[in-house]
Amino acid sequence: MAVELSTWDAQGTPTTPTFSTMRFPAGEAHVKVQDDADAGATTEIATLRGTSGDDLVALGMWADAVRQRGARSVALVPYLPGARQDRGLPFGAKVYADVLNGFQIDQVIAFDPHSPVIVDLVERLTVVPSEQVVHDAVLVGSDYSGIIAPDAGAVGRASLVAEAAGLPLFRAEKHRNPDTGALDGFSCEPLPETGRLLVVDDICDGGGTFMGLAGSTGLPAERLGLWVSHGVFSGRAPQLAEQFGEIVTTDSYPAQQDVPGLRTVPLSPYLTKEIR
Image 1 (cartoon, rainbow, N blue to C red):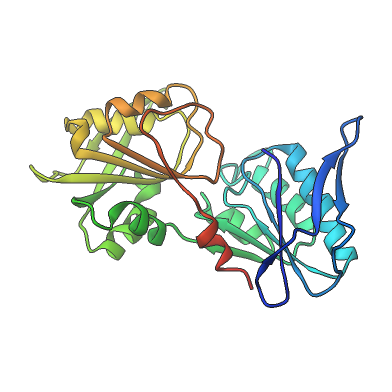
Image 2: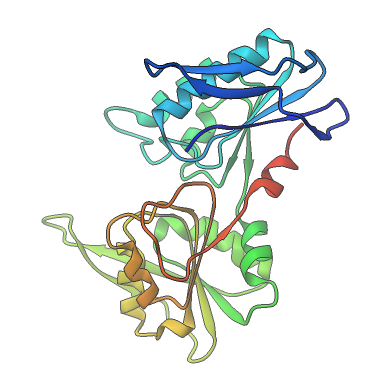
């Protein structure tokens, strides 16, 4: 995925982009300035989706060019790289945060980061939470009657979605083998006998957690929906369509696999309205 560049004028109106990206024959990232671009009172916006190291370097080149021209820089980074590496060796969240901080971008806007650790590490960060997007894109006009948190880590996020929608929250838990640490099944609070239920979490990688949860509920696919803020969808993820009647994510990350019936919600309206 390439870095997408756009420009707002002093009144906050989109105008002709000041910059475009390119690569030299040897592979180095570069940013070109358009001949008719005015320096100064513009807001330069870069959108980075995914985790490509090449795109991160291009983002840095753009940030330097913006700074030299005296404009304001805003980076839309809906999927914050390294957010899942929030402890241990190496401390990936800090490594990625240091890279972003080194670019000296005036404002970084992210969507529903996995961990509060990286939120504390990235400077000049604005976080867009997920509950409004879930409400607008999935719950409005739907017949969902409850929200399921698939594990302990998802309870906080799912609780906010449930509260905003005025729906009950049901908690599920993973169980692991105490000797091996391997996943050893799921349990869930008693679920209503009728109605559709939406599972809410931030990231779907291979989908194992969600498939295991769906199997443990014994519910048919038409009674289960899945919302994930960031859809990596690797490995066996396409099989999710066998157990969920609706699967919804955002365009924060370019999915690695095609998931049948997947619906993708554009985040740009929610991110750009936070530009200051």
